[in-house]
Each structure stands twice: as C-alpha cells, then as structure tokens.
Image 1 (tube, rainbow, N blue to C red):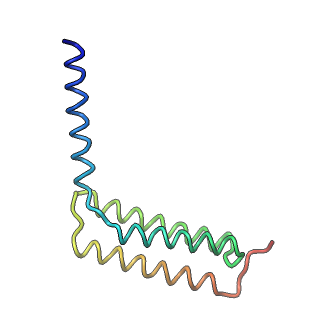
Image 2: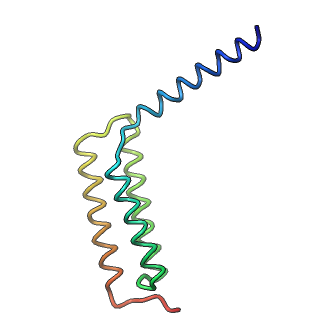
Length: 109
C-alpha cells in the first residue's frame, strides 16, 4: 500500500513538473542567436581581437538579454512586443560584438 502511494505521488509530481515546463514558451530563434553571439565572443577572445574588459562588457550584455528573456517568459507567454524587444536587444548586442572585434584594441599576449 505504501509503495502504491509513493508511486502515485511520484507520478503526480512528474506530471505537474512536465506541465510547468510545457508552459514556458519556446524561443528557438532567440536561443540560437544567443548561442551564435556567445560563439562570436569566444572566437574574439581566442583570436585576441577582444580585450578582457571588452569581453566582460559583452558577457554582461548577453547576461542582460538572458535575464530579459527569463522575465518575458515568466508568465508563461511571450508577447509579440516582448519577442520584438528581445530581437532588438540581440541586434544591438550583435553590433557591439562586431564593433569591439574590429576596433583598434587587441588583447596583449
């Protein structure tokens, strides 16, 4: 009897957890762009195009975007305006990455 109650409780918790994850809206374009930008930053570090200060600033910008995405998804829906704002933030971050990678500053090796 105890094992049945435990199994039932586990099943209910698993269903509830699955439902909670299903409520979060998918943002594959946002996630893919975020990954691409992280990769561009890392490539800039590896090539010496980005200084430590530039890298820190760009990483903070990526963290702000991730935080904005989390906040936008918190209520279980992602409105057109929230999606637009995320894309706008990512576009700005992309321009910042390009600018910092191609300015005259380089990391000293």
